[in-house]
Image (cartoon, rainbow, N blue to C red):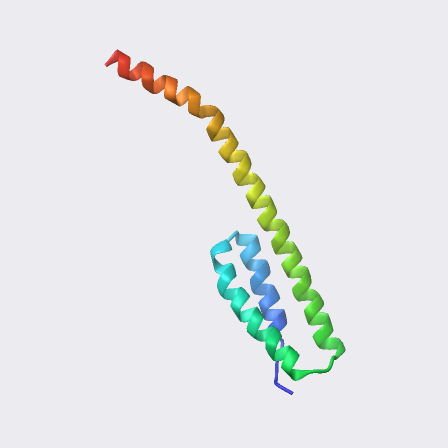
Length: 101
């Protein structure tokens, strides 16, 4: 059986750190690492309580990250809406400034 020695726990910690820091650009590399890890777990076969607990923690980390992504998306959407609302005012200001020049 291949040694996985806490790799899932390390990946869960990395995932939570990425979510806490909103470093979404780091997700693809971590995702590739996790994919390889899960393939090694599948190849190891069988089930043991420690691995199951680590998998549950990894799932929890993914759920937390998904919530973080949703919150970031919503915040970005709100900010875009605010900027769009102010756009007309900026355009009017620019028009007035150009006419005064």
